[in-house]
Image (tube, rainbow, N blue to C red; front, side):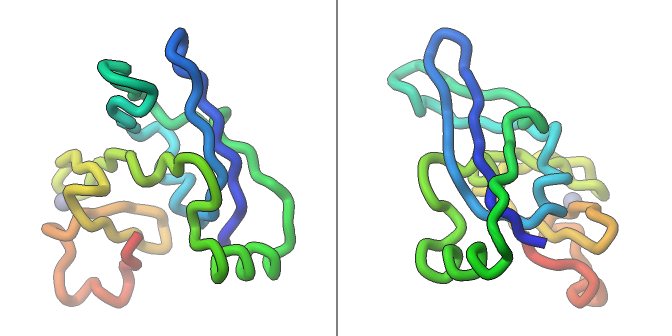
Length: 130
Ligand SMILES: [Zn+2]
């Protein structure tokens, strides 16, 4: 189920990274504990990276109707940064690490994430692209 999330991560001396975005709960569950690399987001050589922690995310309580309307009008990234755009997932089958910019990932009902290289034709209806 999709929820509205507030993301806040303090980056020691450099400042903080924040954002508001819409994402599926299942995807958030899989993303917790994964590496996030923001690069030079807070200025040259700032090299912002870390692990996505549960504490970095707060659910903003709004109705499902509001979420659907927001997504329709604004898309999933409402403001600031969406950590899911900067994440590195580990494929649960080949154990390779890919950033979301390098690979397409698929998730099944159990929340297992696999990369596009591991997805077989027969699995296309049980795995959903994330
Ligand atoms: Zn794989």
